[in-house]
Image 1 (cartoon, rainbow, N blue to C red):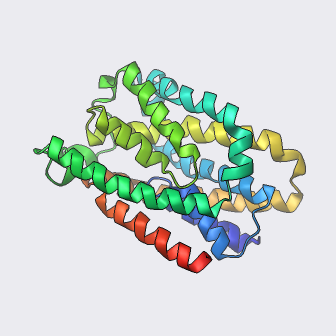
Image 2: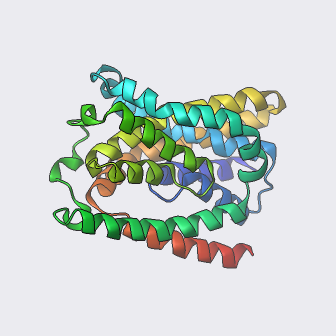
Image 3: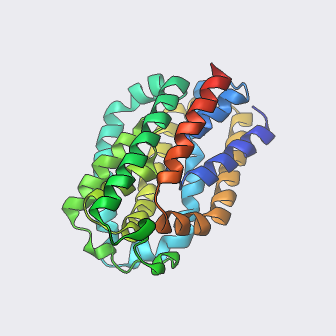
Length: 270
């Protein structure tokens, strides 16, 4: 890997982290397209640069996360299932799932089918929600109703997020769909999913680096820094548009994208 490649992967991460398309899955597939070998460093790189994108959220949402009453406690509650399961399953995930293109393609395809059927079911259940829009205030980066999320709901959303440890299963899609199924508005669960990404990716990066840092060379650190900064910058530029879009539209278009992408990547890679 060279610096240009590291930056390219960082941009891919920054753009896809907040969409229901799986940023990890895209990093793995793009790495395959670039002919990169799935070494232990590349696996760690694909995990660590996600923190760059998440730092954009910290910059934009710091005050709301730490000073809005009850928000941090709900985020911690939702984070608990992923923290526990991630710690237990880390060896399996790192060894057999990260870097596995076959797993990513299957998850992308089936996830796309699921998104389409879920949105159709959700629309029938909520006929007043035209085109998936629950209000025009979604474009504002505020948190009018996060306190309405119960701790039980937060924990269940966390369980949904833990499924995204499988590459190709989108963390954003898993948490948002879980919240919608629990009866939360699209605006509230999108914002909560955003905040939940902060401890999740920080813990995943820290945990992996503690186990892998001794094997990194000086050049590895420079590549990691390049990817990290690229992910942060691209996410910072894209986040407002992407969050607004997700709040105001259904996931059906992303479902079709996932199916199409899975088929195209399959034809190219296999």
